[in-house]
Amino acid sequence: MDVLGAWRAFVNVSERGSFTEGAAATRVPQSVASRRIAGLERHLGERLFDRSSRGARLTPFGRDMLPSAKRLVRLADDMEYEAERARLNPLRLAVPDICAVRDLARLGAEARRRGIRLDVHPAAPADRMELVRSRMVRAALTAVPAGDAVWSVRLGLAGATDLLPGTVYVETLRAGRADRSSRRGRIWIQPEDDVPHIRDPMFRIRDAVGLQPGQVGVSSTLTTAVAEVLGSTDLLLCSAAQAGELGLHWRPVGEIRPVRGFEVSAAAGDDAERVRDGLWHAIARCLGADDDGADGGDAARGTGGARDARNAGSVGGGASSSPRN
Image 1 (spheres, rainbow, N blue to C red):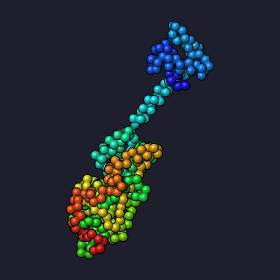
Image 2: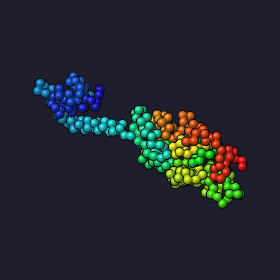
Image 3: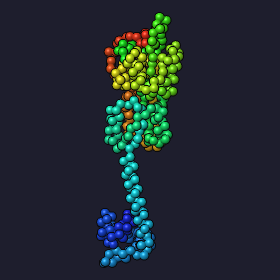
Image 4: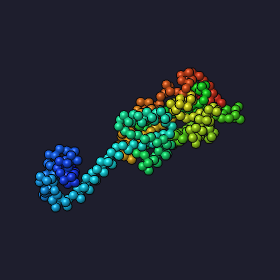
């Protein structure tokens, strides 16, 4: 027996005093409304209506049951309304604030095609974790080491000059004896990469090859870092795709292979699964990762393309394609 449907029919018939009109209000045929109410009466063991040619009149038992029946029907209506609102609520996703607007728009469009209403919220790495913990977002793309990553993006060094060698070694930024008075080239780590599994290895390489502490540092903003690079021989640690967006020329790092790793963190496991499995390729595009989890490689090495790879030049006062001077 459809208990809720029976109580709904009971309320509608009682309010209209007619099985015909009550059935119409319930949006079922009169025969169905009659069967439901009859089944309810058998279930309760008492008659709810006195049926006559003059209409449907409540019995004393029916009058006693009517207030509770109305509360039940109102509660059911409220639950259906809340369910509809929940279906329409967007899934708020915290994403890296370096993602391009166009890529995020394409992510949103792909989500809609898959029945997901997505609301993206760009934020820095630490902020994304806090947004998940505080339930301000339902899910976030969080920074993790490459071994734990769902998406991986290879990082390299990018500069304003088109004279970068095929591979840039951090060691080549070390000043020689003859040029100690000149400005020494620096490597800028942007806020997105200010995480231990990227920042600390870069600092260790800096110290191991004999650079000054200030030659590898973290910038307060990406804009500040790019401004430094555009006005000098400084280099930015970034992905190949990001270098292309910024008009810089990208090369891999010689001593290490830094990688941005991302996973989905969510308060509810099903939200993480919907994002990870349903939107994998669209998110990879936003992050600058390709389908096999790496960056775009040679095809995305900034604006200089393959032509830059054939050029050799100096980085920060002297560079070569190997770590040997």
